[in-house]
Image 1: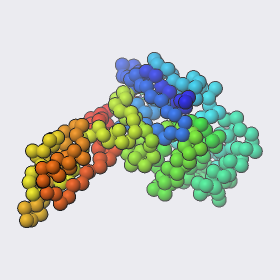
Image 2: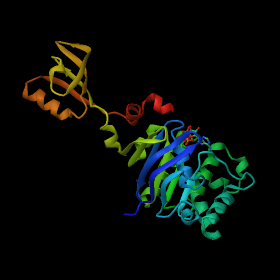
Image 3: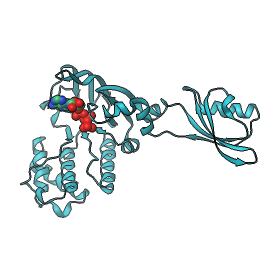
Image 4: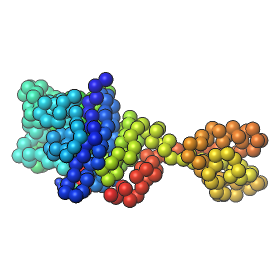
Length: 306
Ligand SMILES: Nc1ncnc2c1ncn2[C@@H]1O[C@H](COP(=O)(O)OP(=O)(O)OP(=O)(O)O)[C@@H](O)[C@H]1O
């Protein structure tokens, strides 16, 4: 399958600073791809190269099989990190204007614009000047401009910032709808909960370099497993246990243990050992790490800050 977006060994330097460091990844149609990293990790710089706003110093970028630039722009949708609209236009005029830029007919852009603004709860504000809209409303107009052409590749830079929870939910729905319709969606964020709910695959960037790429399950598997075990004896001597620290004394000889397995060891093997050795258990519960834990494990607090 042809990739909707492909970067190969992309480098971008600003003076002595390498903002993007030999970055390679590919996104397929229908996929929601999380582009994650802390402040200053290089997310915006990477996306700007994809959009041909700036040029890489080395490496290659293919956008819908073409070099970044005008050729692919009709099938591309983009929500930039810095929001900004022409303040003298109305909400609908704005969306129509962007649709026309993408090569749509005025009639198509208008009907699609109405539909989108209606869906975003702005049906009553079609003719309101953008300068009279609240920040969040203006942001939804901008989202409509990004998807007006039903793009095959939708790129959203920090799309959730500035939106209230209801509108964050609306945006999540829009992202999933676009992917269901076959678009590849790439969104950058440093908020892991959004990534957790949306991403088929994700990439973790730190100081311009890729630190991880894969599914959420693969990301979680980079962390050693952690379990809560209620037993009468310490699980520390079982194979694969890296540490077992005693928690609450639950009476009658039972103790809650916080158990960490050595990397690569599976909780199922530990459970089997307990059964084979006749170790009585009252609870055996795996702690499912969040992407936030994964992020800190792979990137570290220092990397997150850059
Ligand atoms: N035009 C520029 N000139 C010089 N340095 C730049 C320029 N643009 C970005 N940088 C630097 O490149 C690095 C990466 O910045 P970038 O904006 O890509 O990060 P980011 O991951 O999008 O961060 P954030 O989440 O804070 O927006 C930063 O150290 C930034 O200061």
